[in-house]
Image (cartoon, rainbow, N blue to C red; front, side):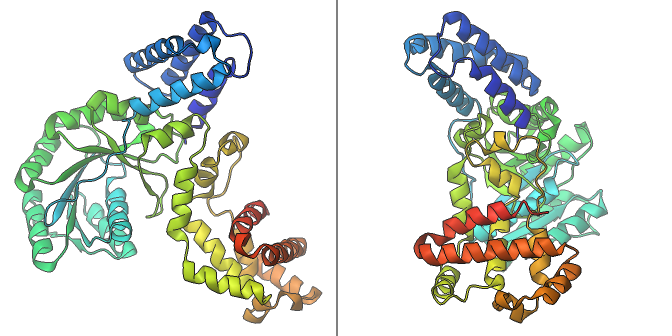
Length: 445
């Protein structure tokens, strides 16, 4: 996420780090490099220029030249200005109304239908809401099918009417169904086009006027850069939407849309999509995103994800097994599944301060534990519970069944034994150490 921008900003600020001699010329050169980095990230020229002018003004106004650690102060100024540029405060979603109606808008291919499902899953699991998805794309039958598939995947009902060709009537019927059947959130997925056109804008405007949603969200593909910002402006002029959804932030995005969209349309980014999985949705926090862009990580979000997946009852059971020396591979497999639910591995590692830079250029598999899982699944239930029974012939069978080498099976057994001993010694703090050990084991290929 924003790897190229992060790298260039790091280089731009590098000359002001440490205790070297700092001059007004240095600051001017640094801000010039910062502006160049933003332009390379497809940030609007006017916004990039205004941003660096503010940074330079604040830097000189806060006595960076005489500060004990001018580099750190400059980084803080850039971080604060980035935070402000991306919205400053975290904006929540409006869930007033009975039911709360959320209208999704955007171009075709922006990930609107998939994100409608992600949002429904987010509200269902984290806000304990009962959402209903409504399919209003009357032009692409595949879009209706896609929404039904997504709804089935997350356990959320989808309302559609393939015989009705008026999206306004479908939306109204969906809301009526929600009211009569106790759904408290309605998410309406509308049709998109390959480009902004009059017919499309008139249609979405008619739906908006007819249903008066509590929340109108514009979904945009962050990989389209400045085009995304221009499209957002066109939609906002017609809809006056409430917030922006940035999708595909896990891709090769330059970051221009995330940085400049708030400044152009004066509407907050409310959510971001960071992968294909239905759980790959995050509330957008400007301050945390600024820290990630500057390579500071995002420990708070990492902890929040861990807490969401932490099962206290399961943890107590595992603690008892550790105490009795009965911690087996089934328990280990369960811990792996919890880590995988937190998100893709590269995204998680990017939340650790300094890790993003260290991992630059490395291709981290989204399913980095698959080889370990394959080995464990090739074991019998008895072998998983009693790893000490694994003799040479059994190891060969497991290796063959998992498509791995015998030495990889031996490596896993050795690491598992070391981890088990460490967890037994540490007891209460074992969970944290286990995460670290598993992080080392994921590199086994």
